[in-house]
Image 1 (tube, rainbow, N blue to C red):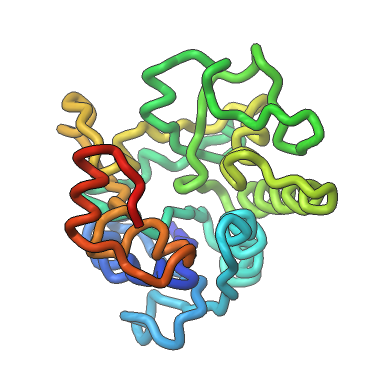
Image 2: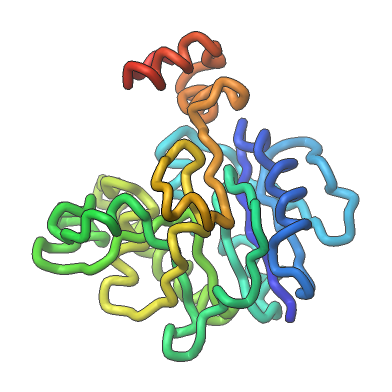
Length: 265
């Protein structure tokens, strides 16, 4: 089985690539033919000489435009991956810690698409409290009383044909919003939740993309994929990664934020 992994690491997010690749080589889709398509504006990246890595230029943008551009970036490589059996996208800060195999491959009943559910919203279980886009003028609009799940935009995949069709529709909807001066409340994620509202994707369990600083004991014991803490000082901090500031967060400020729930940069 041929599987394409689409990875976006523009700007400072390239700092996560080494951990992603090394952990993926160890745990992600063993016994499959896996190729990594890395979208980045970095001049050079680790492992780019490897046979299973293709570096593709993608221009970095200021946040939140950078995340709104996700589907356009993913589609820009479709000529590379259109003939693969399946395509998966994982957030830049993903690190795999246990084997992940074909159990997450979606079937016909799922429209050959899959997406991961956010654990914190799954535990709430009240759709009207989900952070859906509530602006009726947005293509991502979901009215109150609708919805059963809240999905993350950082882990999704599917059969190549269906995946390309999904990304094409999502990109079109993002551009419609832009033309009307609208950016959905949670950007690409808002559009993805609207897309799957009336569909039946395979829902990847939360332990496949678990934030490393969360403490849900029952889930943590079976975690397969970690979302590394972007706020951590070793990555420069969230604001630094997004380009909001050119100063990396200090270890002291990081621990003050963590202990007192502040937002020092």
